[in-house]
Structure formats: C-alpha cells, structure tokens
Amino acid sequence: MHIYAFGSICRGDISLGSDVDLLAIVEGYNYRIDPDTFSIYSYKRIQELWHEGNPFAWHLSLESRLLFSSDELDYLKALGSPEPYKNCVQDCEKFFALFCEAYDSLVANSTSKVFDLSTVFLSIRNIATCFSLGTKDKERSDFSRNSALCLGCNSIPIALDSYQILERSRLLCTRGHGKNITDNEIDTATRTLNEVHEWMNNLVEKAKKHE
Image 1 (cartoon, rainbow, N blue to C red):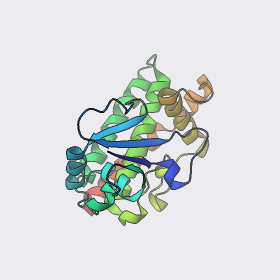
Image 2: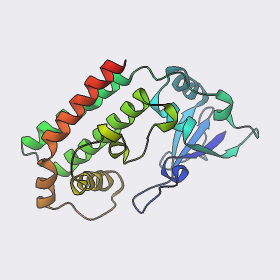
Image 3: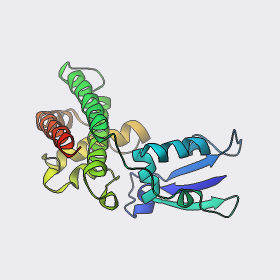
C-alpha cells in the first residue's frame, strides 16, 4: 500500500476552502481505507493512467508527496514520468460541451442555478488545466482552482468577482463550504457566460493548432 497527498497542500496554496487530497494505491479491497477520505486506485489502474499520459497521472507526478509506503519505496517516483499527454483537443472539447450543457440549463431558468454555476466552474478549471498541460512545458502546467487565471494571454477574460462567484458555487456544491450565492450574484456570473463561451472556443481552436 502507498499513500500520497496531492493538490493544494503540496502546492502550498491551501486556503479555507481547500481540502486535503489523499491518494491510496492498494491491491484489492482494504477495509482500513475510507473511500470518503481517499481517492482509491489499484496499481494496475495507476499504471494505465501513466501509460495513457492522463492529466491525473501528470498531476500526481508533478504534485504529490509520499506519506506512507508498505515497502519503503516511492511507487509513483519509480514509475518515472507519464507518457506524453495526447488527448488535449478531445478533453478540451469534452469540457467545452459540459460548459454548454450547464449554460443551456441556466438560460432555460433551471431550478438548480447554483449547481449549474458549479458545473461551469468545473468545466472552466478543467479546460484550462488540459490546455495548460497540452500546450505548455509540463513543469509549468497548472492544476489549481485558479488554472484559468494563470494562462497568460490565454487567461479567462472575466472580472475576478465573477470568477469567485463561480468558484464559491463549486465549493458549496462539493464541500458545503461558504456563504450562499445570492440571486444578484447568480445574475452577475450568468452575464459573463458569453465571454466564457468565446474563451473556451478559442482554447479549443488553439489546442487544435498546437496538436
């Protein structure tokens, strides 16, 4: 068994809204590992992710720290670097489509607007991370919640307060953390979505050119 921490605590940007991301790599079922606390993977699946060049593999390779090893070895370090990330365009298109679904739901005056805004933030963060990983030096890839703000000239072109409303929506829906989103804040964030749509479309097109 190998236990790792990853994410914000390893980057050093942990905040009140952060949790501690923990990975457990195990062989078969282990009653000591709580699935509500750990992301649980088999050794075979981790090897597959490494072979695929999956973004999560790169995240672990670049931003994880060993906490426990049953054989005193660093299993992830021993795997070396993951294979090159090959699915940037497909992944960017996938998260763009996820954004469009949430956007359509908001426009249709759904009763789950905060959840829709949470999904918008998820798609923004993930498309930015995939674009970063697929088009930049791997060592400069950004896996943080602020990945969309850290793309230089390709950063998301919306006001910070709107971005933070989307981020708060995500934290509320996934962790129950933070103040409720007001109707005015929902309207503020929703008004930025045309800009977000154009930004995402541009990232997809730039990813295609980089391929």
